[in-house]
Length: 154
Image (tube, rainbow, N blue to C red):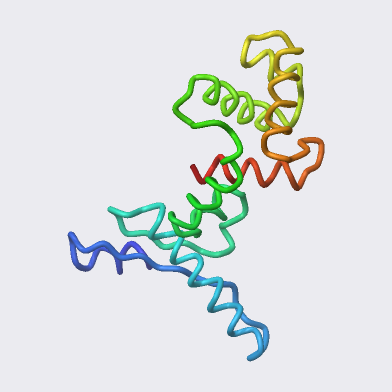
C-alpha cells in the first residue's frame, strides 16, 4: 500500500514509521515511541525519496543508528574518539583504519593484519595504542560496541 500512498503526489517526499503492535493499552506508549524512531530512521536514510520504515526492520547496529539524530551521533563519535589525535593527521587515519578493520574482523589480530598488510605485531601495537588513548579495552564486547558505534556515527 505504501507505494500507492507515496505515489499519489509525484515530487512530494513522504516518510513513515511503523511500530510493533501493542498487546494492551499499556503498550501504546512504547509502540508509538518505536514508530517515531522508525520514522526518524526513514527520514535519515532516504532524505530525497519516500520511505516507510518498520521498527521491526531495525535489527542491526547500522540500522539502529539511522534513527539517531545526526548531531547526537556526531557528538557521541567525537566524545568516544576524541582522545585520538586530530583526525587530519596521517597517524590518526592509520589508527582509525586499524580500529575499523580490527572490529570488522571480530577482534582477530591475524585477519586484521592480513586485511591491512602490516605484520600482526604492528596491528597489536596499534590496537594497544588505541586502547591507551581511548581508555577502552577491546577484549570487552561493550567497549568494542562503543567504538564501533562511534566509527559508524562519524
